[in-house]
Length: 70
Image 1 (cartoon, rainbow, N blue to C red):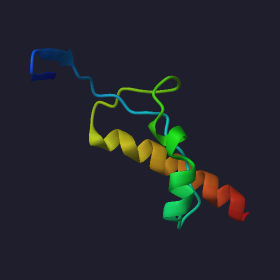
Image 2 (image 1 turned 30 degrees about the vertical axis):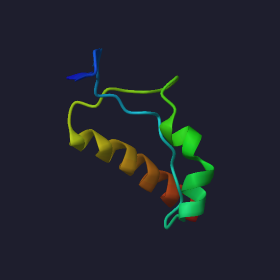
Image 3 (image 1 turned 180 degrees about the vertical axis):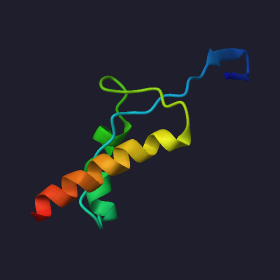
C-alpha cells in the first residue's frame, strides 16, 4: 500500500508492535501509562498475515492470567 499526497509518496506496511499484556479488566489509565510500549515498533514487532494472528497474543495473555490465578 502506498500513501500519496502533496508531492509525498511512501510505502506503508502491515506491521504490529510487540504491544503489552494487561490484567483483565484494565483501565484507560493503565493503557495510557503503557502507551509507548503499545505503540513502539523499534523491537519485537511482527508482520501478521491475517486478523486471526491476534488470537495468539490473546491466548498468551489468557495463559498468563490463568497462571497468576493459580
